[in-house]
Image (cartoon, rainbow over all chains, first blue to last red):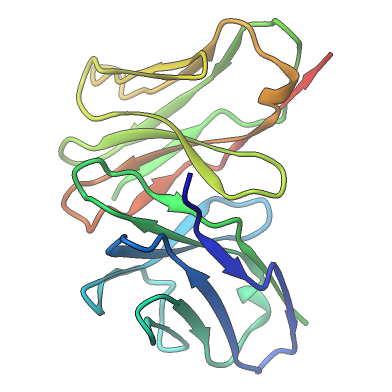
Amino acid sequence: EPEVTQTPSHQVTQMGQEVILRCVPISNHLYFYWYRQILGQKVEFLVSFYNNEISEKSEIFDDQFSVERPDGSNFTLKIRSTKLEDSAMYFCASMGSPTNEKLFFGSGTQLSVL
Amino acid sequence: GNSVTQMEGPVTLSEEAFLTINCTYTATGYPSLFWYVQYPGEGLQLLLKATKADDKGSNKGFEATYRKETTSFHLEKGSVQVSDSAVYFCALSDPGSARQLTFGSGTQLTVLP
């Protein structure tokens, strides 16, 4: 089965630094998502992206966050100035058709902000 | 807003035991309901889904029925295996919201031989 690939699997950064989390969605998919899970808490929606623009974003996704699809294959999440509370597992997901509603998730990037 | 409440874990069972993981939801409209599974070191994978009331989703011996009257979508399996050890997430999708998922908190299942 095709896979969503995320890199790196682990990222450690200092508070205030910028990080970019990378995702390669399944090649013919058109809908892209970022979710995150803080340790011990629920998986939370961050943002959805379609047709080169944000479709929807949660209240978590403030001005410190941005997403980009720079080259037609990668889908990136940038956190401009990381905070301690940004430490979480970040999951990328993609979907081909909205009619079957099946999201394919990557294995996640564990972000640790020190 | 939408929310999903899931049975807290961890759950530990012996092989061949019966499994139930409870899930209830709050949503406006008519959401689709899902169970996702996360095996160690892997991403979330769709296990099964149901898109309307009384639908039963099933896969790999797991089943869940969309119960609108009780707003529930409980996951069941008649005889679990060691390989079923994973974290299970209940989720719902509001078709009017760019297909974003609202997740429960996840239930860690460990099956002992």
